[in-house]
Image 1: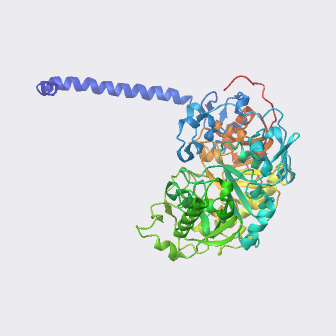
Image 2: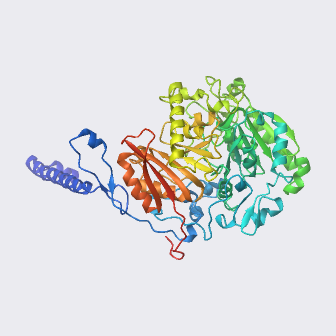
Image 3: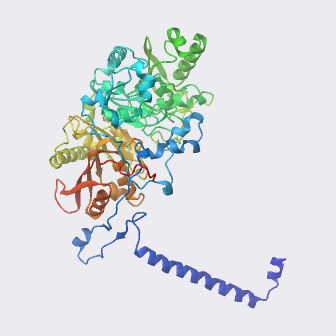
Length: 628
């Protein structure tokens, strides 16, 4: 009826109604524009108390280029002591919101903006500056990682022991009762490539307290220890407190934050991952991360192979090493509370799956089994058949895409045009550090000249940094993070110092992480608008190179500073290299998180950018009761 009545209205009446409506719309738009102009005149740079006060442009172009962002001084309150081990994106307080199937609750679930903490994470009462490397590999202060679960549950297996005010790490483990040294010696006998520089990078899934990764450091192999935050309590924090590279993560429904063909070797020692369940996704994932032909990490291999979790992370020739069920089931099944028949069936299924993913048995002895990822391209071509499972991933799946990317049950096939990414084609360590990575040709703007310039630049910068921070290169700095690297230039320049560097490539930047792994370095993807996958107080030095300039349009920088403060150890340092526009604002925020900073020139001098040399103060909570 309404439509009919409106149709019968005189034309003049219709015009009379349309004109006032149009005027009303224009009036509202104008009012909105006016109010928006008023609001934007006092535009907030950060939520809360920090307000941006832009300087008026000067008529001089030179002086205009040197304008700086001015913000008001602020302060952040202390979090309560029950946040001393706060990991925002893997917070047990929020696990019940997510499903427990396939351990999805242990994956990254970052809090929404309105739930972000704007307080300073306190250290435990009695916290001390960490014991220095290499002594830290054998012991740490109990009060720095005051968790007794592993000590009580695993004390008979010599993972760690509490003695007085320290935890001691005897080098034991579930599958190496004679010690990690004897275990790795046996592994080297099975895999000679661990000795001659062929294998340089490795991943340890279900790392325990990272004794395997710690032992490999003396053998020239750089390993990332991986474990979730679960009932084992702070496995990753123990690893980092010891000075061993580690990151929070779980093999479940998403790819790990590493590129394809990244690790030369993968390892799992009784990590209890159900490799042949859930459609074999986990095994496929491990295969993704292994380099062609060599990647020892059976469990990881199974996952990587699907290019969903671990499959694409191993290059052709990469090794996958598994110790524990179902390896050596004939002699071990009784201790695993199962039957010999069940373990035999599991072993056969695992072997069939690995064979279908172009892995072959490389060696077996006692409790250790080693598979190798084939470098025969014809094997992967056969996977194109739609009748096979797991099948070859189609071309629509980007092999290096990893940040929040779901696992898929398919095998990432090596690209035939990349002849030098297979493990047996790479230069041996340490020569591979200096060789232009073949995959640089896939990177926009990447070429040999850019790679060489980057190397020369970071040699000069590293030398300058040591003048600004004399402790760099000594035993006082062990765990280092380069928060927004390109080719890993800083890590390469400091390769002979007693430290290791976690190279972080922004998930929104040009993807250069594959080249970092090809050089024999380690790293991860990350979005600095979110919290990093680590515990509080786990890095001695944070390095920033233009991160605020690059990401300030996406990320609220106060949260970046709060996150840096969370992961930096008390008395640790930050080197913040930034444009002159941001440097003073960052200095104010650094004071708000209780850092002491000084402004220094770059190695080139000039006024376009400066370096903030900051040190985090050691303080203890005065706010034990109030939860924030």
